[in-house]
Length: 224
Image (cartoon, rainbow, N blue to C red; front, side, top):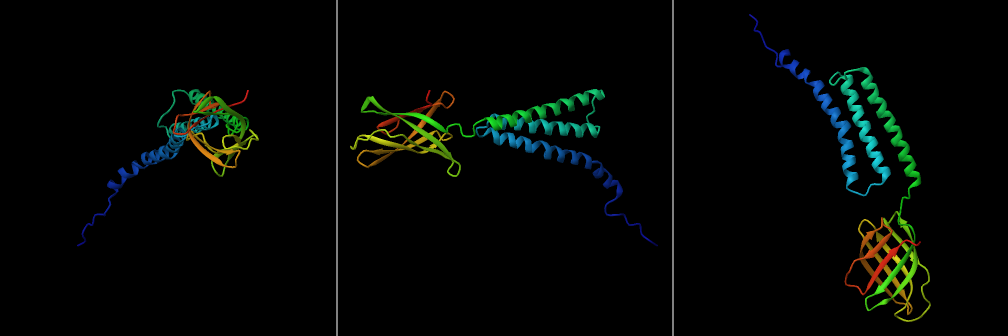
């Protein structure tokens, strides 16, 4: 007499799990398509994005949303009332992506990558004699290896005494940290290093040091 041995996993138990596979696949597609886009936009918002960065984020988000909408339409989960609606949506998405791409490339090639490079007018004011500031020109450039701006001034004076600034050197300027450091070369051969916290205005064209424990204050502005 043979015994009826029931299978360990009957077919009746397997069918519900198989029916849930499309739902799981759709959820995984949702995570794989939309989550990277959201993470890209989130990390972009933590920094200082350029117009090109923002346009790229918009383009990626639009493409990901349309792609997922197309998957839902193709699987008949979310169907449009009329065929022309879907064609209009996809056509508008394609035109938007192409237009955004053109704007991104145009902004990428025309915008300055390092906006603080170039000439600046520098004014140093001594708290002991604020009516006689020292004004000179300086040119800044950006170091990609150092991640900072640096530069040199023109010849300020030829006097040989300990109170006269002969020339100045911008050794460390990081706009994100809003700090600037100058090394002043004096007439007697000595050097003095100053570091200030900065406030920025006029869209980054005017920089001014905040009060600190030094006897000098600094202002930087773009020349006219």
